[in-house]
Length: 340
Ligand SMILES: NC(=O)c1ccc[n+]([C@@H]2O[C@H](COP(=O)([O-])OP(=O)(O)OC[C@H]3O[C@@H](n4cnc5c(N)ncnc54)[C@H](OP(=O)(O)O)[C@@H]3O)[C@@H](O)[C@H]2O)c1
Image 1 (cartoon, rainbow, N blue to C red):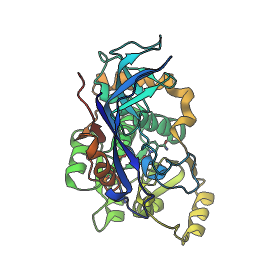
Image 2: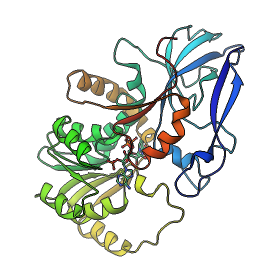
Image 3: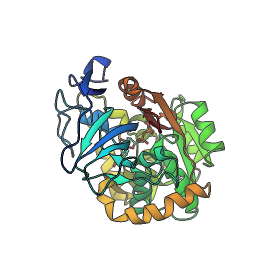
Protein backbone atom coordinates (compact mmCIF):
# COMPACT_ATOMS: atom_id res chain seq x y z
CA UNK A 1 0.00 0.00 0.00
CA UNK A 2 1.40 3.44 -0.89
CA UNK A 3 1.31 6.18 1.70
CA UNK A 4 -0.53 9.38 0.95
CA UNK A 5 -0.30 12.69 2.79
CA UNK A 6 -2.76 15.47 3.61
CA UNK A 7 -2.71 18.76 5.50
CA UNK A 8 -5.66 19.47 7.77
CA UNK A 9 -6.75 22.54 9.74
CA UNK A 10 -5.56 21.94 13.32
CA UNK A 11 -6.85 25.20 14.85
CA UNK A 12 -8.49 28.44 13.79
CA UNK A 13 -5.89 31.22 13.60
CA UNK A 14 -6.17 34.37 15.65
CA UNK A 15 -4.67 36.96 13.29
CA UNK A 16 -1.86 35.73 11.07
CA UNK A 17 -1.94 31.93 10.60
CA UNK A 18 0.88 29.98 12.28
CA UNK A 19 2.43 26.68 11.21
CA UNK A 20 0.81 25.08 14.28
CA UNK A 21 -2.64 25.88 12.81
CA UNK A 22 -1.94 23.11 10.28
CA UNK A 23 -1.29 19.38 10.82
CA UNK A 24 0.11 16.81 8.42
CA UNK A 25 -1.46 13.35 8.37
CA UNK A 26 -0.51 10.15 6.59
CA UNK A 27 -3.12 7.82 5.10
CA UNK A 28 -3.29 4.91 2.69
CA UNK A 29 -3.84 5.76 -0.96
CA UNK A 30 -7.56 4.96 -1.31
CA UNK A 31 -9.10 2.55 -3.83
CA UNK A 32 -11.84 4.00 -6.07
CA UNK A 33 -15.31 2.52 -5.64
CA UNK A 34 -18.02 2.24 -8.26
CA UNK A 35 -18.24 5.43 -10.39
CA UNK A 36 -15.17 6.91 -8.70
CA UNK A 37 -11.73 8.00 -9.88
CA UNK A 38 -8.47 8.10 -7.93
CA UNK A 39 -6.64 11.42 -8.33
CA UNK A 40 -2.97 12.20 -7.78
CA UNK A 41 -2.26 15.89 -7.15
CA UNK A 42 0.31 17.55 -9.40
CA UNK A 43 -0.30 21.26 -8.74
CA UNK A 44 -2.02 22.77 -5.71
CA UNK A 45 -3.17 26.37 -6.09
CA UNK A 46 -2.78 28.61 -3.05
CA UNK A 47 -5.17 31.55 -2.96
CA UNK A 48 -5.94 34.32 -0.46
CA UNK A 49 -9.53 33.09 0.07
CA UNK A 50 -8.07 30.12 2.01
CA UNK A 51 -7.47 32.44 4.97
CA UNK A 52 -11.22 33.03 5.10
CA UNK A 53 -11.95 29.29 5.11
CA UNK A 54 -9.74 28.92 8.21
CA UNK A 55 -12.09 31.18 10.22
CA UNK A 56 -15.67 30.48 11.15
CA UNK A 57 -17.01 34.04 10.96
CA UNK A 58 -19.87 34.92 8.63
CA UNK A 59 -18.83 34.48 4.98
CA UNK A 60 -20.14 33.60 1.54
CA UNK A 61 -18.63 30.08 1.94
CA UNK A 62 -18.53 27.40 4.64
CA UNK A 63 -15.35 27.23 6.75
CA UNK A 64 -13.05 24.20 6.70
CA UNK A 65 -13.97 22.19 9.83
CA UNK A 66 -11.27 21.61 12.45
CA UNK A 67 -9.54 18.40 11.37
CA UNK A 68 -10.80 18.83 7.80
CA UNK A 69 -8.50 18.79 4.76
CA UNK A 70 -7.58 22.34 3.70
CA UNK A 71 -9.55 23.32 0.62
CA UNK A 72 -7.92 24.12 -2.68
CA UNK A 73 -8.05 23.89 -6.43
CA UNK A 74 -5.70 21.31 -7.95
CA UNK A 75 -4.45 20.01 -11.24
CA UNK A 76 -4.52 16.24 -10.83
CA UNK A 77 -3.88 13.07 -12.79
CA UNK A 78 -6.43 10.27 -12.94
CA UNK A 79 -4.55 7.23 -11.61
CA UNK A 80 -7.43 4.75 -11.81
CA UNK A 81 -10.98 5.14 -13.04
CA UNK A 82 -14.29 3.38 -12.50
CA UNK A 83 -16.05 6.32 -14.15
CA UNK A 84 -16.76 6.13 -17.89
CA UNK A 85 -16.21 9.91 -18.29
CA UNK A 86 -12.53 9.70 -17.24
CA UNK A 87 -9.64 7.47 -18.24
CA UNK A 88 -6.38 6.64 -16.50
CA UNK A 89 -3.86 9.34 -17.45
CA UNK A 90 -6.39 12.16 -17.90
CA UNK A 91 -5.29 15.48 -16.41
CA UNK A 92 -8.15 17.22 -14.64
CA UNK A 93 -8.97 20.42 -12.82
CA UNK A 94 -10.27 19.40 -9.43
CA UNK A 95 -10.85 20.66 -5.90
CA UNK A 96 -8.90 17.84 -4.26
CA UNK A 97 -7.48 20.18 -1.60
CA UNK A 98 -4.19 19.95 0.29
CA UNK A 99 -3.50 16.26 -0.22
CA UNK A 100 -1.48 14.01 -2.46
CA UNK A 101 -4.35 11.69 -3.41
CA UNK A 102 -8.13 11.97 -3.44
CA UNK A 103 -11.22 10.12 -4.61
CA UNK A 104 -13.85 11.83 -6.75
CA UNK A 105 -17.16 10.75 -8.22
CA UNK A 106 -16.34 12.94 -11.22
CA UNK A 107 -18.64 15.82 -10.36
CA UNK A 108 -16.89 19.16 -10.73
CA UNK A 109 -13.90 17.64 -12.55
CA UNK A 110 -12.90 19.26 -15.85
CA UNK A 111 -10.45 17.68 -18.28
CA UNK A 112 -7.42 19.81 -19.15
CA UNK A 113 -5.87 19.62 -22.62
CA UNK A 114 -2.14 19.59 -21.90
CA UNK A 115 -1.39 20.41 -25.56
CA UNK A 116 -3.05 23.85 -25.34
CA UNK A 117 -1.05 25.40 -22.48
CA UNK A 118 1.06 24.36 -19.47
CA UNK A 119 -1.34 22.48 -17.20
CA UNK A 120 -0.54 24.73 -14.22
CA UNK A 121 -2.30 27.63 -15.98
CA UNK A 122 -5.64 25.88 -15.33
CA UNK A 123 -5.47 27.23 -11.77
CA UNK A 124 -3.84 30.51 -12.81
CA UNK A 125 -4.16 32.79 -15.78
CA UNK A 126 -6.53 30.39 -17.60
CA UNK A 127 -8.37 29.44 -14.43
CA UNK A 128 -10.08 31.07 -11.45
CA UNK A 129 -7.72 34.06 -10.96
CA UNK A 130 -7.73 34.89 -14.70
CA UNK A 131 -11.51 34.61 -14.82
CA UNK A 132 -11.75 36.88 -11.75
CA UNK A 133 -9.68 39.57 -13.45
CA UNK A 134 -11.57 39.24 -16.75
CA UNK A 135 -15.08 39.39 -15.33
CA UNK A 136 -14.50 41.91 -12.55
CA UNK A 137 -12.78 44.33 -14.88
CA UNK A 138 -15.05 43.95 -17.92
CA UNK A 139 -18.42 43.47 -16.18
CA UNK A 140 -18.02 46.05 -13.40
CA UNK A 141 -14.99 48.20 -14.26
CA UNK A 142 -15.96 48.57 -17.94
CA UNK A 143 -12.78 50.48 -18.90
CA UNK A 144 -12.98 52.77 -21.92
CA UNK A 145 -10.07 53.75 -24.17
CA UNK A 146 -8.02 56.53 -22.60
CA UNK A 147 -9.38 55.96 -19.08
CA UNK A 148 -7.08 55.25 -16.13
CA UNK A 149 -7.35 51.83 -14.45
CA UNK A 150 -5.53 51.26 -11.14
CA UNK A 151 -4.99 47.83 -9.59
CA UNK A 152 -3.07 46.77 -6.49
CA UNK A 153 -1.32 43.42 -5.92
CA UNK A 154 -0.39 44.18 -9.53
CA UNK A 155 2.27 41.48 -9.93
CA UNK A 156 -0.05 38.80 -8.55
CA UNK A 157 -2.35 36.32 -10.21
CA UNK A 158 -5.42 38.57 -10.49
CA UNK A 159 -3.81 42.02 -10.61
CA UNK A 160 -1.33 41.19 -13.38
CA UNK A 161 -4.18 40.09 -15.64
CA UNK A 162 -6.35 43.10 -14.74
CA UNK A 163 -3.74 45.64 -15.90
CA UNK A 164 -2.94 43.76 -19.10
CA UNK A 165 -6.63 43.41 -20.04
CA UNK A 166 -7.06 47.13 -19.32
CA UNK A 167 -4.25 47.80 -21.84
CA UNK A 168 -5.93 45.52 -24.41
CA UNK A 169 -9.07 47.65 -23.98
CA UNK A 170 -7.07 50.84 -24.65
CA UNK A 171 -6.94 52.14 -21.09
CA UNK A 172 -3.95 53.44 -19.14
CA UNK A 173 -2.90 50.85 -16.53
CA UNK A 174 -1.28 51.82 -13.25
CA UNK A 175 -0.23 49.11 -10.82
CA UNK A 176 0.51 49.21 -7.11
CA UNK A 177 2.87 46.52 -5.80
CA UNK A 178 5.16 45.76 -2.89
CA UNK A 179 8.79 46.59 -3.68
CA UNK A 180 11.00 47.70 -6.57
CA UNK A 181 11.42 44.26 -8.19
CA UNK A 182 7.68 43.75 -8.45
CA UNK A 183 7.13 47.29 -9.77
CA UNK A 184 9.90 46.90 -12.38
CA UNK A 185 8.36 43.62 -13.54
CA UNK A 186 4.87 45.16 -13.75
CA UNK A 187 6.14 48.02 -15.92
CA UNK A 188 8.82 46.32 -18.03
CA UNK A 189 7.45 42.81 -18.50
CA UNK A 190 3.72 43.33 -18.22
CA UNK A 191 3.65 46.71 -19.99
CA UNK A 192 1.72 48.72 -17.38
CA UNK A 193 2.15 52.46 -17.86
CA UNK A 194 3.34 52.92 -14.30
CA UNK A 195 3.62 51.09 -10.99
CA UNK A 196 3.87 52.52 -7.49
CA UNK A 197 5.41 50.78 -4.48
CA UNK A 198 2.86 50.75 -1.66
CA UNK A 199 5.67 50.54 0.88
CA UNK A 200 6.91 54.01 -0.16
CA UNK A 201 6.30 56.56 2.52
CA UNK A 202 4.41 58.84 0.17
CA UNK A 203 2.17 56.41 -1.65
CA UNK A 204 -0.57 59.03 -2.08
CA UNK A 205 1.72 61.57 -3.79
CA UNK A 206 3.28 58.89 -6.04
CA UNK A 207 -0.13 57.69 -7.09
CA UNK A 208 -1.29 61.23 -7.83
CA UNK A 209 1.71 61.78 -10.13
CA UNK A 210 1.04 58.46 -11.88
CA UNK A 211 -2.63 59.33 -12.44
CA UNK A 212 -2.65 62.97 -13.63
CA UNK A 213 -6.22 62.63 -14.94
CA UNK A 214 -7.50 60.85 -11.81
CA UNK A 215 -8.76 57.26 -11.61
CA UNK A 216 -11.73 55.96 -13.61
CA UNK A 217 -11.56 52.30 -12.55
CA UNK A 218 -10.01 51.06 -9.31
CA UNK A 219 -9.90 47.26 -9.17
CA UNK A 220 -9.83 46.67 -5.42
CA UNK A 221 -7.69 43.70 -4.34
CA UNK A 222 -6.28 45.06 -1.10
CA UNK A 223 -8.17 47.70 0.97
CA UNK A 224 -6.34 49.33 3.90
CA UNK A 225 -3.77 52.05 3.27
CA UNK A 226 -3.83 51.44 -0.49
CA UNK A 227 -7.54 52.20 -0.70
CA UNK A 228 -7.06 55.31 1.43
CA UNK A 229 -4.49 56.59 -1.10
CA UNK A 230 -6.68 55.74 -4.11
CA UNK A 231 -9.97 57.09 -2.79
CA UNK A 232 -9.37 60.88 -3.17
CA UNK A 233 -8.27 60.35 -6.79
CA UNK A 234 -11.47 58.63 -7.94
CA UNK A 235 -13.10 60.59 -10.77
CA UNK A 236 -16.79 61.35 -11.11
CA UNK A 237 -18.56 58.17 -12.29
CA UNK A 238 -15.56 55.99 -11.36
CA UNK A 239 -16.22 52.25 -11.03
CA UNK A 240 -14.73 50.12 -8.23
CA UNK A 241 -14.99 46.33 -8.61
CA UNK A 242 -14.36 45.14 -5.05
CA UNK A 243 -12.60 41.83 -5.58
CA UNK A 244 -10.55 41.33 -2.42
CA UNK A 245 -9.33 43.04 0.76
CA UNK A 246 -6.17 41.11 1.53
CA UNK A 247 -4.81 43.83 3.83
CA UNK A 248 -7.61 42.93 6.27
CA UNK A 249 -7.73 39.11 6.10
CA UNK A 250 -5.60 38.59 9.22
CA UNK A 251 -7.41 41.22 11.29
CA UNK A 252 -9.02 39.90 14.42
CA UNK A 253 -11.75 42.51 14.80
CA UNK A 254 -13.52 44.95 12.49
CA UNK A 255 -12.09 48.47 12.77
CA UNK A 256 -14.62 51.25 13.38
CA UNK A 257 -15.43 52.97 10.05
CA UNK A 258 -13.75 56.25 11.00
CA UNK A 259 -14.24 57.83 7.60
CA UNK A 260 -17.47 56.17 6.49
CA UNK A 261 -19.17 59.58 6.26
CA UNK A 262 -16.66 60.99 3.74
CA UNK A 263 -16.80 57.74 1.77
CA UNK A 264 -20.57 57.94 1.52
CA UNK A 265 -20.44 61.61 0.62
CA UNK A 266 -18.03 60.86 -2.25
CA UNK A 267 -20.17 57.95 -3.47
CA UNK A 268 -23.07 60.35 -3.70
CA UNK A 269 -21.46 63.49 -5.05
CA UNK A 270 -19.10 61.73 -7.49
CA UNK A 271 -21.77 59.14 -8.40
CA UNK A 272 -19.29 56.32 -7.74
CA UNK A 273 -20.14 52.67 -8.37
CA UNK A 274 -18.75 50.17 -5.87
CA UNK A 275 -19.68 46.55 -6.48
CA UNK A 276 -18.38 43.53 -4.63
CA UNK A 277 -18.28 40.27 -6.55
CA UNK A 278 -17.27 36.63 -6.26
CA UNK A 279 -15.98 35.10 -9.48
CA UNK A 280 -18.81 32.54 -9.58
CA UNK A 281 -21.32 35.41 -9.96
CA UNK A 282 -20.16 35.69 -13.56
CA UNK A 283 -20.20 31.99 -14.48
CA UNK A 284 -22.24 32.90 -17.57
CA UNK A 285 -19.14 34.66 -18.98
CA UNK A 286 -16.95 31.53 -18.76
CA UNK A 287 -17.34 30.81 -22.48
CA UNK A 288 -16.20 34.35 -23.36
CA UNK A 289 -13.25 34.00 -21.00
CA UNK A 290 -12.21 30.69 -22.60
CA UNK A 291 -12.46 32.34 -26.02
CA UNK A 292 -10.43 35.48 -25.18
CA UNK A 293 -7.88 34.65 -22.49
CA UNK A 294 -6.07 31.68 -24.11
CA UNK A 295 -5.79 33.73 -27.30
CA UNK A 296 -4.37 36.76 -25.47
CA UNK A 297 -1.87 34.49 -23.72
CA UNK A 298 -0.85 32.87 -27.04
CA UNK A 299 -0.44 36.32 -28.63
CA UNK A 300 1.72 37.48 -25.71
CA UNK A 301 -0.80 40.20 -24.81
CA UNK A 302 -1.31 38.65 -21.37
CA UNK A 303 1.83 37.38 -19.67
CA UNK A 304 1.91 35.56 -16.37
CA UNK A 305 4.41 34.57 -13.73
CA UNK A 306 4.28 31.53 -11.47
CA UNK A 307 5.83 31.31 -8.02
CA UNK A 308 6.37 27.66 -7.15
CA UNK A 309 7.19 26.06 -3.82
CA UNK A 310 8.16 22.41 -3.74
CA UNK A 311 6.23 19.63 -2.01
CA UNK A 312 2.94 19.54 -0.08
CA UNK A 313 4.83 20.26 3.15
CA UNK A 314 5.67 23.74 1.82
CA UNK A 315 2.00 24.77 1.57
CA UNK A 316 1.41 26.17 5.10
CA UNK A 317 4.43 28.49 5.01
CA UNK A 318 3.63 29.47 1.43
CA UNK A 319 0.06 30.48 2.38
CA UNK A 320 1.35 32.48 5.36
CA UNK A 321 3.73 34.23 2.94
CA UNK A 322 1.08 34.85 0.27
CA UNK A 323 -0.93 36.87 2.78
CA UNK A 324 1.97 39.31 3.20
CA UNK A 325 3.46 39.37 -0.28
CA UNK A 326 6.38 36.91 -0.23
CA UNK A 327 4.98 35.40 -3.45
CA UNK A 328 5.97 37.00 -6.74
CA UNK A 329 3.35 35.79 -9.20
CA UNK A 330 0.71 33.07 -9.02
CA UNK A 331 1.44 30.93 -5.92
CA UNK A 332 1.58 27.22 -6.74
CA UNK A 333 2.74 24.17 -4.84
CA UNK A 334 4.28 21.35 -6.87
CA UNK A 335 2.84 18.35 -5.00
CA UNK A 336 3.94 15.72 -7.50
CA UNK A 337 5.67 15.44 -10.87
CA UNK A 338 3.70 16.06 -14.08
CA UNK A 339 4.63 12.55 -15.22
CA UNK A 340 4.39 9.95 -12.46
N1 LIG B 1 -13.75 38.00 -5.56
C1 LIG B 1 -13.23 36.86 -6.03
O1 LIG B 1 -13.92 35.98 -6.54
C2 LIG B 1 -11.74 36.66 -5.94
C3 LIG B 1 -11.12 35.61 -6.66
C4 LIG B 1 -9.72 35.51 -6.60
C5 LIG B 1 -8.98 36.42 -5.84
N2 LIG B 1 -9.64 37.39 -5.15
C6 LIG B 1 -8.88 38.40 -4.38
O2 LIG B 1 -7.98 39.05 -5.26
C7 LIG B 1 -6.85 39.52 -4.54
C8 LIG B 1 -5.58 39.04 -5.23
O3 LIG B 1 -5.57 37.61 -5.21
P1 LIG B 1 -4.42 36.80 -5.98
O4 LIG B 1 -4.81 35.38 -5.96
O5 LIG B 1 -4.14 37.47 -7.27
O6 LIG B 1 -3.18 36.97 -4.98
P2 LIG B 1 -1.74 37.56 -5.34
O7 LIG B 1 -1.92 38.97 -5.78
O8 LIG B 1 -1.05 36.62 -6.26
O9 LIG B 1 -1.02 37.52 -3.92
C9 LIG B 1 -1.44 38.34 -2.88
C10 LIG B 1 -0.70 39.69 -2.90
O10 LIG B 1 -1.39 40.64 -2.10
C11 LIG B 1 -0.51 41.66 -1.78
N3 LIG B 1 -0.72 42.14 -0.41
C12 LIG B 1 -0.79 41.39 0.71
N4 LIG B 1 -0.99 42.18 1.77
C13 LIG B 1 -1.03 43.45 1.31
C14 LIG B 1 -1.21 44.72 1.93
N5 LIG B 1 -1.40 44.84 3.26
N6 LIG B 1 -1.21 45.82 1.15
C15 LIG B 1 -1.02 45.72 -0.16
N7 LIG B 1 -0.85 44.54 -0.82
C16 LIG B 1 -0.86 43.42 -0.07
C17 LIG B 1 0.91 41.10 -1.94
O11 LIG B 1 1.50 41.72 -3.07
P3 LIG B 1 2.52 42.97 -2.92
O12 LIG B 1 3.81 42.38 -2.49
O13 LIG B 1 2.52 43.56 -4.27
O14 LIG B 1 1.94 43.87 -1.88
C18 LIG B 1 0.66 39.63 -2.26
O15 LIG B 1 1.64 39.12 -3.13
C19 LIG B 1 -7.03 38.99 -3.11
O16 LIG B 1 -7.59 40.01 -2.32
C20 LIG B 1 -8.00 37.85 -3.27
O17 LIG B 1 -8.73 37.59 -2.09
C21 LIG B 1 -10.99 37.52 -5.19
